Image (spheres, rainbow, N blue to C red):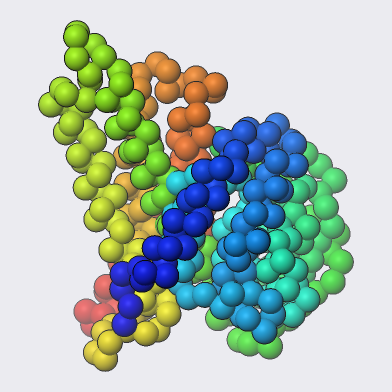
Length: 337
């Protein structure tokens, strides 16, 4: 059973962080929010060259054939750097839902995909930018749809452009050669898992930026980070993030099915627990970052807002906190019977 990231994961993380640090992701995110996806597509192309877009896709379909630990590592980096676009839907959810080799190969090659899977995800994220758009019907069948004819709905995160599903514009359907209920559940679990990792990465970025600000911002003759009250706030955030990380690793083990003999595996339960912990930790990081930064944290021009609004929006992406807590509670009750 592999619980902690391996040396290969560490090297992959270093390569991905180096790539995204040089890719101008902040500028791409701001352009994405304004409707210009050209800089963002360059970031996606770079991710495809590194194999990120094909992590969850089997090698026979042009992907990398990575495991859930690889996905956790990648999505933490994507969240840390604030990569715009439907990364969860394209890189994690659609590979779990689709069986068509052509679609899978396109995604592995860097095509941007999005999917609406009601009731948890009733909107198509960035449907105007996506190359592949899918909706999952009530019967579990998957269909592709045309580009939206209406503008996006409002979102607290301006880089998340939400479009209503237009089922009248269905182009073609795909019914996977697997149990439909299990396929849909796999997609939902994959989405929640990727969001948990993305939130953990975003929370760490907020903490790192806030620590740096606390070191540089002086008040009453010394850096505000030297005051005990600020230290306590930041320590609380660091603790919550560190406590969420093992739950994410445990969820990765559960998804891989490679636990040691006698270990109770329940992917839905473990992913839900990780999602709750990561979202709570990231939300605390966002609130603390805003409190420590003060009024500057409210300004749209300050980059901190990109992560604060993303964390807020992701609180309800691929299931709300209440839904995931209910999943954990139901699993605990069943185990106690």
